Amino acid sequence: MSVDVLITGAAGFVGRALLDRLRSQGRNVAGCDLRGDEHRLDVTRDADVLALLERLRPKRVVHAAALVDDRVPRAQMVAVNVGGTEAMTRAAAQVGVKRFVHVSSIAALGYAPRSPADEHSPLQPGTGGAYFDSKAISERNVRALRGAMEVVVVRPGDVFGPGSEPWVTRPVAMMRTGQPVLIGDGRGLIAHTWIDNLVDGLELALDHPGAAGQVLTITDGVHDTTYRDYFARLARAANVALPPWSLPVGLALKAARLGEVAGRFLGRPPSLTEGAIRYVTRRSTYSIEAATRLGWSPQIGLTDAMDQLRRALA
Image (cartoon, rainbow, N blue to C red):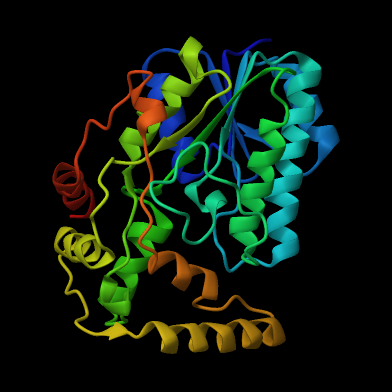
């Protein structure tokens, strides 16, 4: 048995969207996930990873499996995001995968990289934030494999769409109960990335000959959308009220630090982390030029995306 594309994390938000797109085109694609019902796989188990790849013999792998919740304990985050990526790349090289597409994140560049951040910006594996560090380390390790097989790194921005936990589901739930979603008056800049624009970019990474060896940042290409603007649009799309108040940055940071300490003591995740606050108050911008040089461009703008989201949430 041989498949054209294997997608890890196929039950997740990004992996499922890519799987559905490729299947709609009639491509020979398989998905695996710890929660999946097609090919169940724990990417941290080396023997299981190798066994699956030996059975499916994929020509290309899209590695989208990752923990994205920065409230997860660091050891667990590193085990999945770093260890799982290492297990996948080892097995992929061993079975002769032609191209390995690694779904990284702009978070690999830290809380507030110098603008405009691009493929030459330094990775930041020492921020202290488990998610940010794990994405930087895993991307660094994948990029070191160039030569063993074709490697493409895709760095999505803040990916939203129906079912996006951090940028749709969770903030809408907070707004429904009157909880504030704005920090620092919402002046930070969001690198919003509509899910269909990202899937277009992942297709490019899979198939374009010129993508081999590249690091491609995929966002909607808009550099001036504040979190206040984004959440106001999201509130209208979800037919909820945007809570008018905002948490001052200093107060939010203190509350997050206390919450993280209490969370470790009580054995439960904090509601807010210091890393998340630093991230949503940044003013960094990200260049998509590397992807546009290969012919990709974002096809759906923020207004049209919010219209689609409104219909999905109705």
